[in-house]
Image 1 (cartoon, helix red, strand yellow):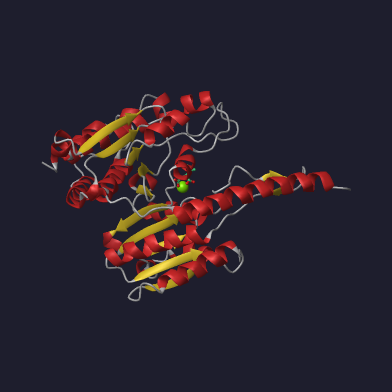
Image 2 (spheres, helix red, strand yellow):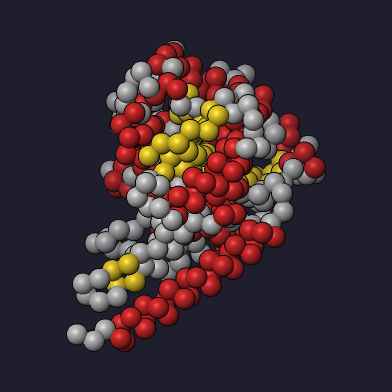
Length: 386
Ligand code: IPM
Ligand code: MG
């Protein structure tokens, strides 16, 4: 068989990927430092309801934020901006993962609170567009996906720093079917991309008084991209003398997270995109599942805070969206407050939520009319704040 044509076409596509990624590297080299919120006259908080149960739960987190930031809003120091177009219907209609008009509105904000958005899969009635989360992370360069998991009574206190713009996700929709038999995907790692996530993890560790950062890769097999990720982390570690860096492979790490004796030793974990995606779902399960976890997507200019679960369209079809669990997006709101410089309010909300979810538990969310509605639960949380 002569595959010259197929190989030439594949090389062409590979060439395009390379030039796009090299451009991205140039942009990263030119990027400024993190936005300093204390220098802003006004902080604009965008609220993206998303679709499925998204609008129902996001509305509750927004009510709580407005309650906590009432004085600041009245004084014009904080402004809320509703962004409604990030629904699967609109995305499908314009055939864009993140419609241009939505992106324009997002760029007018400093931080974004985002409900879940539907990611079409094969067989769905929607065009097979990319996930809105992934598109938003790329478009706003939200490179650090920060996911905390805590189970105090078991000594679990982990903060994951998942690289959020590279790895298998950078060009996840640009793989090549070279022939009917051969398919190739691309995994991207850059020095700048790894350095900034490693530095973010170490900076957090330093600020939070942590003594260990754990790098998780599969560098024994994926020698180039993962190998470089690990060596850049080692380089960055040299700037943080009081903090130890240890390195683990993803397979044994997934095992050790379920080992009650070993798992308490982990504090801050830094890892490439896909391993971070998988490990953070496993980790969240210890604290009650992905519905209980919040997630911050942080870049130098923008940051987005989201629930880590999906949009559960079935709940809406069955008229149960008013009973959807708002805890994950309220956790995201905690991280948002912390990020924009309201650490005290963030702590107060975190304590109130912990009390409602884990200790007092006066209301239960069951996802049906056997439990509280999201609005009742949000009122319950707010009753602990006044
Ligand atoms: C997450 C999600 C997304 C991801 C999906 C929805 C594309 O699983 O935020 O972890 O893979 O990053
Ligand atoms: Mg995930």
